Length: 347
Image 1 (cartoon, rainbow, N blue to C red):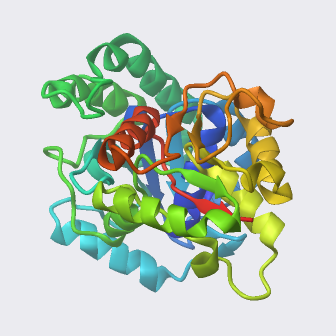
Image 2: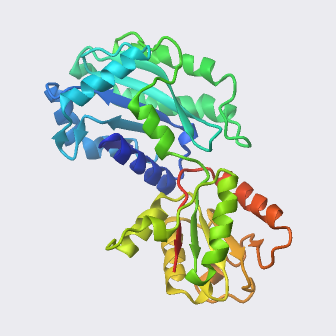
């Protein structure tokens, strides 16, 4: 995918695209394109070729960000100069020529992501960039197919210790394609604003909790318990602003969510909002990312559309016996899904 936006908007798009396409950010490469308002060819290219580039990398684990073009306007060069200075001060000598920086993500201890920059290239000419971008995408995808998936530790969601040496084998291919030396001498996490934004905006194992407002007390207790397990969540009463378009906000939240937890209670199975949320999520998912929770409802006697999920494994919270164990079971189920965003909404 390609994203023409500022960093925050780009991160939101990464979350949405990864969820829609079933992509894992930990199995992805990210390209960070830097150029100024005077680099007319690059500006025209990213504006005019957006659909073609996005289509070519659609559904693939390769994501491109250019923070310079924003809503068809150009970000002030002062911001670009500040960003370049931050990279320089952190040990990545970004100059005033157009530049491509590459990074990948690792899982951090705070349930988030930590970006590691492993390669960077000053672009000798726009023509080289235009002719080789497709090759760069193809080489990256080929790397994942041949090397990365074999090394990935699915049970821990962490990069294996020998990931860095394998990534080093990719750098000469980038150097050959771009006709430029790598300016990132060793994998590193620079002290730059984009890194801070990634750490703050992206987190793993999050879920949209669909529930009736009659079950708000239970959901608040559950969310507090999940927060203690480093699983974030939000309540609609805190996140949906007065005057906000609730249905639109809910739909966007569902698209960005890695999973849907449905609290099945006597009230929720009658709730039009819960039915709406379930139907919306089923429209973008085949059921693999839905976790039912029983809270007094009978799993074998559910009305439509809940019958579509009655055969899924559920966690029974109908009484508070073994509360901690059930919370742990839910956390494990959420972590098994491991794509970006946790959302909750009541009805």
